[in-house]
Amino acid sequence: MTARFLWDLVSPLFVRSLEFLPNLHTLEIGPVNYHPFSPPFGNALDGVKLPQIKVLILPPIAHILVKHCPNVEAVDWVIGEHTVIPYEFLRSLMSTQDSKIKRLAIPLVSSGNPSRK
Image (cartoon, rainbow, N blue to C red; front, top):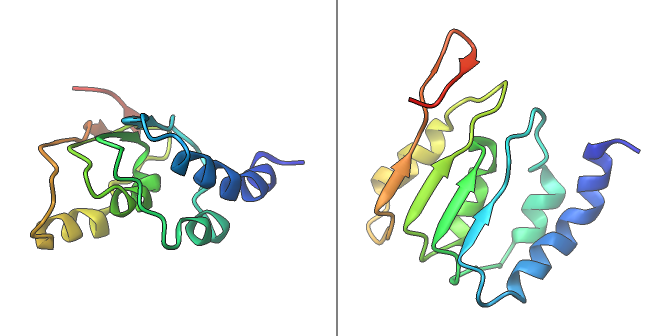
C-alpha cells in the first residue's frame, strides 16, 4: 500500500477525531511531497468546523484546513521540497472580512532550495 492510498482511507477518521478533541488548539502537519489533501480529505471536511483550533502549522498544500478553523489566529507554512504558495488562499484572505488571523508566516524559497529566513 502506498502512503497516498492509506491517507485516502484514514483521512475521514483523522478529520472526525479532530472534532472530538475540544482542547486541541494547535494543529501541525509536516511537509509532504505529494498531494494528500485530495477529494477524500476534502469530502471528510464537508460541514466540519474546528473552532478550538487557534494555530495551524501546515504545508501550503493543506490550506483547505484554514476555512474550517474559524477562530484560527496564526498560520505558519511548513515548506517541503516542492512547496508552492497557494495564491488562491492568499486572495481569499484579502477578501475575508471576519478573519481572526493575526500572524501569517510564509518562509522564503529560492532556487528550489527551501530555507527559513
